[in-house]
Length: 104
Image 1: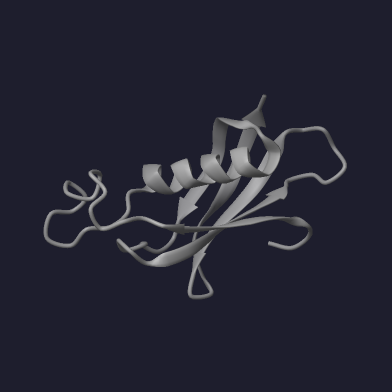
Image 2: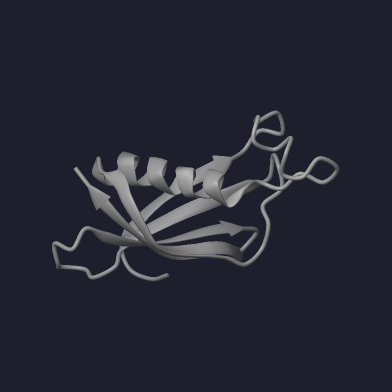
């Protein structure tokens, strides 16, 4: 993802309640928790709520307590579309990417 945007660090604690069921012997951070981090980053950057997830692709897992980064950028710079591209990366590898829409 290129261009001006926003980055926010994330780390999901190994004690997070969603991890126990996803999966009991080898927990992974669920996609919905990653999307929640995208929503929190959008709120921190633009003061917007996450209105809609238009696209989301999860290509690699994030393990509990691993450090990652959420990156956001305008989908169409200069346009008032309210759409933003996101990436979640760990150790230089893209774990998830997609397109979301924000609203006030």
